[in-house]
Amino acid sequence: MERIYLDNAATTKIDKEVFEVMKPYLLEEYANPSSAYMFAGKTHDKVEDARRVIADSIGAKSKEIFFTSGGSESDNWAIKGVADALSSKGKHIITTKIEHHAVLHTCEFLEKHGYEVTYLPVDENGLVNPSDFEAAIRQDTILASIMFANNEIGTIEPIAELGKIAHEHGVVFHTDAVQAFGHIKINVDEMNIDLLSASAHKLNGPKGVGLLYIRTGIRISSLIHGGSQERGQRAGTTNAAGIIGFGKAVEIANERLNETREYETKLRNRLVDRVTSEIPYVKYNGDPKRRLSNNANFSFRFIEGESLLILLDQKNICASSGSACTSGSLDPSHVLLAIGLPHEIAHGSIRFTLSHETTEEEIDYTVETLKKIVETLRNMSPLYEDFVKSIK
Amino acid sequence: MSQVTEYSEKVMDHFSNPRNVGEIENPSGVGTVGNAKCGDIMRIYLDIDENQIVQDAKFKTFGCGAAVATSSMATELVKGKSVNEALKITNKAVMEALDGLPPVKVHCSLLAEEAIHAALWDYAEKNGITIEGLEPPVKDIEEKVEV
Image (tube, rainbow over all chains, first blue to last red; front, side, top):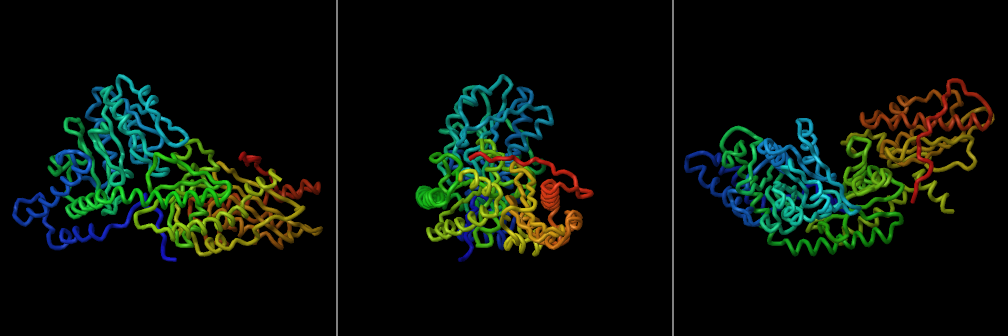
């Protein structure tokens, strides 16, 4: 079997069409789009075309889209930038326990610099309760940062409702939409979003380019200081090829949005149905309905995730794990702990994320392989041995 | 971040084809160490004859690739040894026999050493003997896992 890539939440394969539109801007049209001469003109125009396509896709204006190096920079900029610009108004930020580290570690950084952060809990499916959010808002709350869809368990948060609550209380609302952008239809006005982070390589675009949407009127300080690129808000030579590729990736993703969702949902459900019915002692993590169409996350009792990953890898299947052993710390994934999984069960968790190119044959091969590997590892597990003896 | 590429060929071999997986019925000694919360539990069974020679060793392990490989290697090293020699198998010896471990995985080799000690302690207690230099094992595993 050829390599089966089921880790599309980590990154995706660049689309051939995307690569083709980028190529001239790496080879012939290499001018710096900020330059004054005619040679730079075409590159400049193409970058602005991409900005327009991307802005249109979320109901924003072109001048509200700021290109960055990726999702982590966008998250850092949104949170540190608003925290700095509004520090005289207050120093309280609200986020959740299941954010990406780009948000969590940024908040922890701000805590060291005099800010207070509330980390909202989530329910057993990973959903934030809007009334918990409202209750956490204080006089000095300046910013809320709540992810659109979770990268590990795929749960989609009630963003429009949370954004509405934020606005009713005069709180700036940021969403890390890295996993959702290009996969779910987003409208920043209808969903009450002030700031939104996205990354190109999660939707078959190139790595190293992302964006921050900043609603007109939102006060935010710069993160990267220097030249006057991106309307003076984000310095650094424009990544022209990357941005042009990002624009194409968004165009393609939007064209096939519904088709991809239906296709992935069908295959994902096949994976989930087969795994949960054919392998005993498995838990399917995340919300069964409000979730990304390509995400499946399972906990296999009595076994540990890294072992499972290595054995899958030996069968040419790429997946990822919430186990501590893949993170270099003793604690398993903070997301799995936040949805209430005990440590020993969180350690045995695996995430599969499909793409529009995943086939039914690949899913079936993955299920058959998983069945064998889980059995092998359970036969090696003292926890399973004790469990079997306890039910005899 | 631990990646498969950080493991030596020997670690991968002992993980992919672990030696001595299983249980020993009525073992001379059995030791279980580690903690499910941290993601590693090792259990080593020893069959020790009347001359205090380890005739057989088996293991069961819940844990990462390195945990399985160190258990496998520890059982290989302990077989044929006298009780006193078995006590001298250090985590360093297990690591060396595996051509090293990534730094974040060194604790796995410590668990393997502790698991041998715990099994020897069980053997000594069952037989009412004292093995010089053997400390009682630290009991930190969760006795029962709820379903």
